[in-house]
Length: 250
Image (cartoon, rainbow, N blue to C red; front, side, top):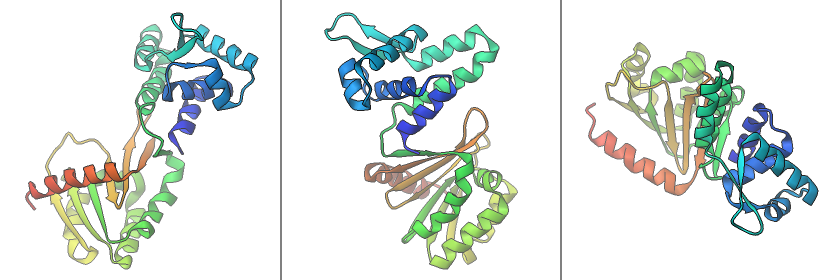
């Protein structure tokens, strides 16, 4: 799911109408837009655009600039709004968490996609078919086991090995799952190195070609994946992982 669509989805869970969510997503991507720009971008009527902008202003999500003609609109800092919700009432803490998530996601570029928990198993098992020659696996292998389970991981590895794809794994935990994984390196076309870090979170990433995948749990405990398709990101991650690999004992 593209970032824009994901932003709209999260705003909808906060009680915004579809039109309000559309305009909020547009303003997060381009703060300081005026009503005409929003109208043209989203295909709304003039009256409808101003009505939605008025509603968002009343709810405290955006602020109009009185110093410019025509008026421009800017979303208030979502992190600040989240703090307000957290202070006001315990039952608004979930809303605050959503706003914090939006605050992070709004800065992400359009070549980033978010995948939800119910989409991940099928996506995960299709990864080996996308590999050409090599894959980096970095993070907590215990997270892999908890997110997908040994059966799914066994199938993933079987597909990768059958395709002849080599893997380098940098593991940040010393769980029994991870030790067993390293013990199978020879038969599974993999080399594993460990970095002992008991505080490492339950998350992991894969890097292959121009694709970077990050699997994690959000504030509500739901498993998600961020997919980034960008040569510049992949190159930066490759350099990072290579340096980490070279500085790590087997």
